[in-house]
Length: 287
Image (tube, rainbow, N blue to C red; front, top):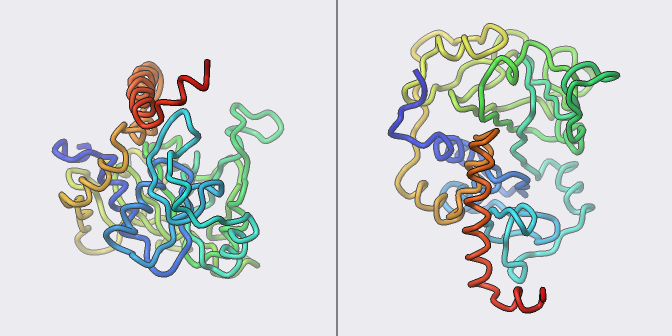
């Protein structure tokens, strides 16, 4: 059965992501889910984090996901400016964390954000590997999330290796960069199975192991003993998420097709009204 209907899957995933973060780390936020998880972690679970909203807005700003002003609306006057050199220094010294949302992840934790299908004749061209090769060779913790756990996303073998997992990909790289955690709409997984394969850590409330197996492109390792349930978000977690994202931009990541288009239009109109109230001169300057 799916996740407990009394819970919002987006709030369960974001809270679970936030609880994985710790220490004096620079946390990058390139999606609504990643930004809100970092923001929640800073507020509730890991006060020593330095949250990077975007390189332009700097570090330790309060995120508000938006549509029309880039990924996030932030108070840039509060931000601590950072350069790309600063960010790569944090990666290479293992003081950087990021939640990556791959298009595919396989049983060894290899990830793909480059293309679907054959490299020479892809069905879909994606954004490209970007910083994942550096992350998966330098960081002692690498975090992934997928919002629709299905055999198309959690696959036996990725179509293209954008980021290195375990197995053959890990040989010669060493342990830094190996996959740590995968959070999906079904549960939390790690890579402690045989030969570094994916294993169940916890299931979200209402989810069964049979559903996980049905929606995965390979047999998932199930450790001996009782599988724990993911701790649901607390009222404080939910309040912080909703206060930071009152327009519910995060929900767009869970949608597609006409449903996503309808939600986009509704958010756009609410955002336009909110920004006009906050910056009333914008309309006059645009004339």
